[in-house]
Length: 234
Ligand SMILES: O=c1ccn([C@@H]2O[C@H](COP(=O)(O)O)[C@@H](O)[C@H]2O)c(=O)[nH]1
Image (cartoon, rainbow, N blue to C red; front, side, top):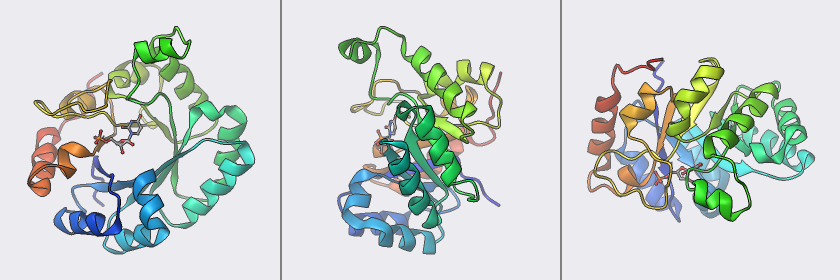
């Protein structure tokens, strides 16, 4: 069975654009991430359509609420049959455990967002946090692992130091991926696809560099080519 390492972020305002891009891409080369914008516009029906066309779906709704609310939402999301869902680790231990428990009989992977890749040290200081980004990522990743989650979302910059303290069966999903010469946009903690894989990322979330490319399939093929055969080097 193929296990594509690239997850394309479908950040679109409507179903039409999503279906058009899905028809151009190749399900053997990527999975699809549906986030807040597209899910708000097109909902579960679009998830079902994309799954029916063979794509595995990462439903990136980043739930963050009281434990009961998050656990119930995770159960309903998992019932859609998606490959992966996520919650915010900052929701705390009880919320993480409630979500894990709600998915105990499910195969949907449950991961936790540590620190958004759009935040850097200055942004943390602005919120009154004096830690380095890695310190926050480290603590939240260990919390997520203790609560039995399957992995975390972090930037590829944190993959290498995390791999030193967390075993390889804990999934690292890394957004903020920017191929050489691509605009960083609003991302602050970024890495190239090769750097991310070499440093221990399992899956690369890539949005605009693919979705806004004049030839998204060609870009996807090139990015897969760049990481083909590459593995984590400790
Ligand atoms: O820390 C995070 C968590 C999620 N994301 C999401 O990933 C994609 C990235 O898109 P690009 O266009 O490649 O920047 C986007 O959907 C985010 O919501 C993230 O960037 N960082």
